[in-house]
Length: 486
Image: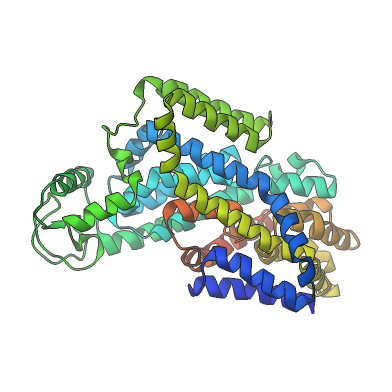
């Protein structure tokens, strides 16, 4: 019964948010509360929630102050050279922009923290997607999948958990997996190429000068009382007069759709991050650029070297960044206010997820679901337990936390494999292949940073990314089998 209710609770949650019948926060709170009553443990709901909140409180604190920190770094212009460099590489070509998203997410993922990766990637790429009217779920999907592959780094979490759970050396698990993970990363880049070609076909290609000139024209028209229709870009399928230099006209479809100046102004007001390309914004601190760069490098180094807990590092970093860059109290309050919406959305989502995970674990539904899946493995599959583990890692790491899978399920799978002569190292390596899909799980706090900063509905992100992330995981598994790693 617990198994059925566990799967039913997760399915109900996913269906409701993908159909947009409930907001993710409401669904994360109300659905598990309702199922907790169905299980007959409604009287313990408070205990489950408090335990879940306690477990995720450090994560919520880290995200809150990380958003403030990187928000301040964006305000003061630390990432402007990155944005300009990506602009020059992408040349306003949707294909290059999507590929650039995958490359940037993969590179930034070297720090081992998904939240940091998503904050930097979205901050750099969002203005391009927004200005060219590209699909934002393509950005979130590609970034999440690339980060999922890179999340297998020994300091990223899953590899260390697998090593701890099975008492193995993390290097012995990870190093042989490098060829398979490299194939997975190449597949993500190929996927971004395919998705980029689709976006290019839908929108067409602009030159960098046209995009920048268009932004200039939009700002000029915002200052005029007249309302005119501005052509933002010339899509491949556009049909109408005017060009991307600010002349008026109407087109059909794609990025060439006619938008009036008031709508363009509304877009800019809606998201101040479009000012990331504005070299004259008042929050810039060019004289402090190298201080901010050194502070960020030091912060990331401390995080990788584990000098202090990550929440403590970001609390200290945010306080120092605010104090040095904005020494006056009114300016500090203004910066905190500017990022308050992101902080509230993400931290609220994390604490709501604490209700979901607390009920799953407290009622025993997670344990029951895992046992049911393991018991369902046919006896004849024993000699192939590594491959079985690889396949099971997809749904299990999506429907439960990494801690639950690696500390609760993996030892059982390893024991079953050992009975048939399968090495625990093979089981551990196979357990990593589900990470591309795991990074879009509703139980991963970092994904809420991604969709929150990109202003994408979690349900839309889920509908788009699940199939591609699962395919990426299967590619990694297939490569591991082909190379004899798994």
